[in-house]
Length: 101
Image (cartoon, rainbow, N blue to C red):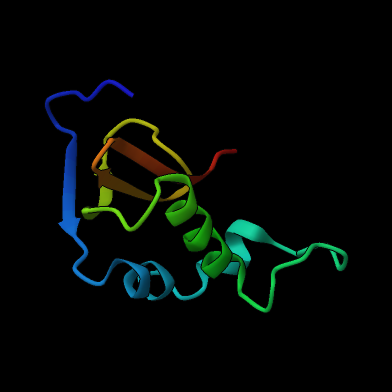
């Protein structure tokens, strides 16, 4: 998305990123992941907990910094979104959960 003059992006640093990711939007887990197939192995974790573990595995450890991204645009962006920027030793990653109609 290309930002225009009236658009705003707010970055909020998450000091306890794992806890914050689980609690920032408490009802979002069902919204993003819906009904989990009964044969899908979550290893006794919630979908977001498993997502956190996969992030740690993918970037080889905890990120150095994590930011919640909030976009306020006069133009269409998404119906709903939950986005994070993760800064790690070897790169910057975007975790973007979005719904579009």
